[in-house]
Amino acid sequence: MNWDIIEGNWKKTKGKAKEQWGKLTDDDFDVIEGRREQLAGKIQERYGVSKDDAEKQIDAWQSQANDDWFH
Image (cartoon, rainbow, N blue to C red; front, side, top):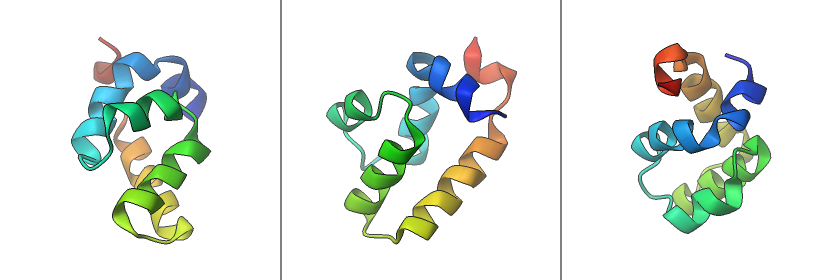
């Protein structure tokens, strides 16, 4: 799924992101506001992983996105 769709529907998709990255706080999600780069940075910060690892996690999560996420 295109990241623009996820970003545009962030209020609906952040619940799925919370399931994936439980260490991120509500404040983190407010800062992220659907921006992929911000999400990667917060994953790096909270989980202590490299930027490449954070990007791989986001890619895997994004590949699972489907229309059910937006209902």
